[in-house]
Image: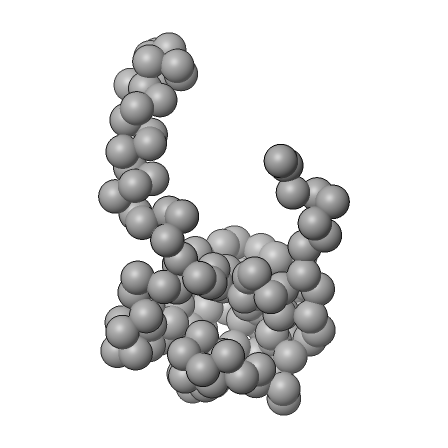
Length: 128
Ligand code: FES
């Protein structure tokens, strides 16, 4: 597959995208699992808590989740950001991530004590 013409595998990529449900999600959570803002072990515990919390709340079809290696804040992690609102959070440990899932993802209420700020993407950066 590495030597395939990228245009030849376009339908395959689209099939993968559709199988993931891309285009049908209301929110996208990106969670940093370190290593600068938090140890890898604590970051992975938070990631596991995010995955199980989304599943337990029945949000699997509405919330997309992505584990990332760095969101460039690099302190007081795990750092997380929720789009489309652009709400950034610090200290999203496994213990605290349940509030993120229940309050923000499930009910649209921000977790104020862990909020770094709200920085939505500029509409001018969105391709038409
Ligand atoms: S390592 Fe987590 S934000 Fe940079």
